[in-house]
Length: 150
Image (cartoon, rainbow, N blue to C red; front, top):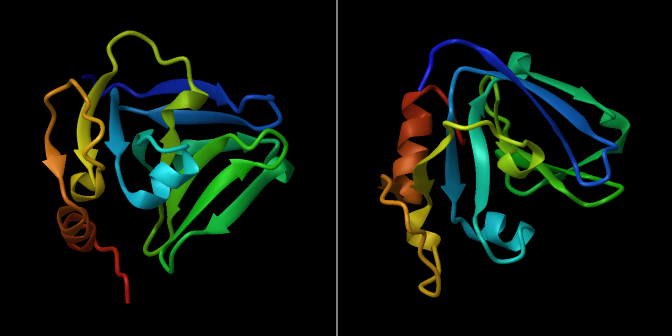
């Protein structure tokens, strides 16, 4: 993993929405929560997590539709092709988890962790041995980082 910022370019299936992400991370996380699984046809959302609003540039924003999936988060998708774009945590400064499928990730990226493991159905398992966090773990980490859910 590197601390040197690098720029990733991504796009939805049809290309109407393009994103540029400045990141120092080379990791992907898998979210097994029921909302991510419903949005992604049954499997987990693989994402580049932890982006701040200043890390992200969006072209084609007029094709971005959002859905408030909870009181504290919204999910975005392309209104032309339906591709999942990101999960946005609304409290605090905000936090974006961008769908890894938007990008052709270079060599060196790894699956870093699996979250909401307590919501993962029994019919699949990922082969990688990664840290596995429950929903309670994730909310505790978010609160410790200054996010509020009240």
